[in-house]
Image 1 (cartoon, one colour):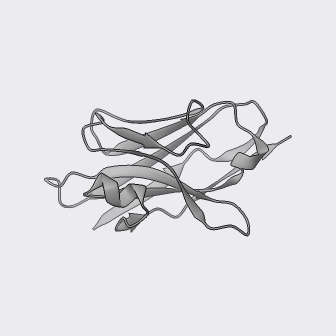
Image 2: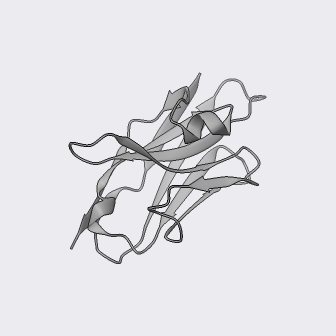
Length: 124
């Protein structure tokens, strides 16, 4: 079992930056997890944003955020960061942290674990 806790959401203006964090905790310290981010705007489905493998050597991004968002993870491997630059109103959504032992399952949203979400609002 993995618990995911997001932080860093808020209200910003278009063009601003925001940094989201997700801390993962698990009793199975020998397990390795890929992690990622999804978002869900009001009235829309949940969509993939970015993912990173356990070692941090491989990343994947949605086309809509490429060049603006950067995903990374800390040396302890149990925290993932989403640096969001040049935010636009269309980035407004609840952002969810995701984790699974396989990165491909995170990319397609078939991961086993989800966080509770953090709201990001971008005003024009």
